[in-house]
Image: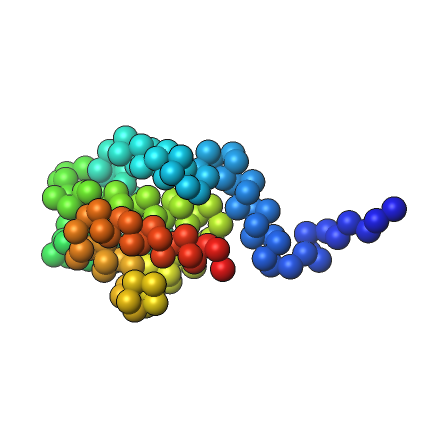
Length: 153
């Protein structure tokens, strides 16, 4: 009978692959066009305050302010409370799509670091700033491509 290693003996790569497949299967958030469409539809149905809350949980209010072109974190708090609606909600929705995709494999701390770091696929640009500053479709496609490459490592 073959020895089956327990979770502690498996390599980190194998553990990540298993976790990603399990989470994707349960959430229906598979990579590719179908998964992208599901994530986008899910994010589009969320109220603006829910989008902001989810992003703040992962990226923090100061970085959400940058992506959403807010003057300060007090504005982000008003968005979270539903007292104001962000003008740049579409950008925040793109950021949340990427966060949800990355969460199929990575933990929030790694996602936060990835959003803030230089990314060679994006010409050493920061994924969060690409979403904040570039045209929306270009940002969505470029950052999702960079996220896919990150998860494939």
